[in-house]
Image 1 (tube, helix red, strand yellow):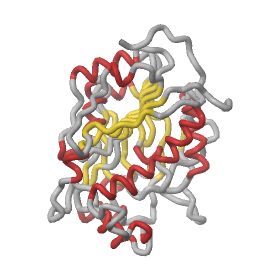
Image 2 (cartoon, rainbow, N blue to C red):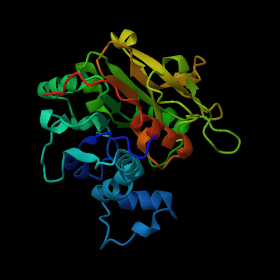
Image 3 (cartoon, one colour):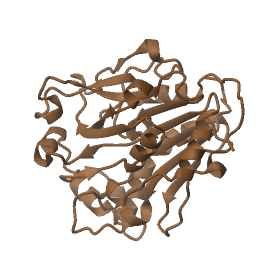
Image 4 (cartoon, one colour):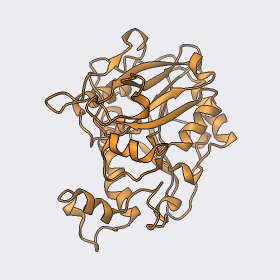
Length: 324
């Protein structure tokens, strides 16, 4: 990758922060943990965040000091690689300010990453005007839209909990409603399903991913051997017309030593981890992958950084027009 790629990158966190941080703590399902809960469950980790005069101990503190920080390394990498600031914004901030993905937001970008860590109970659905802006964005050759949901846990709560084994996850936790609505609105519906425990080697590293190298026209997986070991990753299930419009670029193996899961009961030991639009579906390109592919906290960093470098350093194509 050259010293600077000139890429213009935006990261859009699609949560309604106001709804997320005001979730009642008495309800454990479908909310983020408070910072104090995370400290308690993961002790002795995060002892540096114990000072309640400096760090909000509620859900707001968790979002600020843990979850958002997980994406800092990617954003720093993108800033350094592109030579330009990364535009980061939240769909709804804690004071209720709403920022749509409109023409004003996407104009000037050629790489847009939607981190769909929104709780589905908050009903974050794309608006028609936003879909129009996203379609105009994808009308530009060389533009890349990445839609990144997370897990969907809770169909069979206790069985799923025992499978992934993460005590910080409640019986039901469903993310990615905004991602689902965007993909359905673009006529490529995808369901982020389950929270599957990925396989690891005897040394504790992620098992290699299974890649469709011949399909990797952008070179995103060049030199990428693994993804990460986040303990609950979604199977990205293409439905309806998406089967013909999206292709599976990479699959990830499931941990055979983990307790059983409904997804594996018929011998299915891999899940679809990275999808891309087939040639000609859009003038630009669409990628669908888990949000933790842009996070720095679940291992596999050498390969993830290579993935980021490939994404930011992908070849330029002639630009027919700008959106808007």
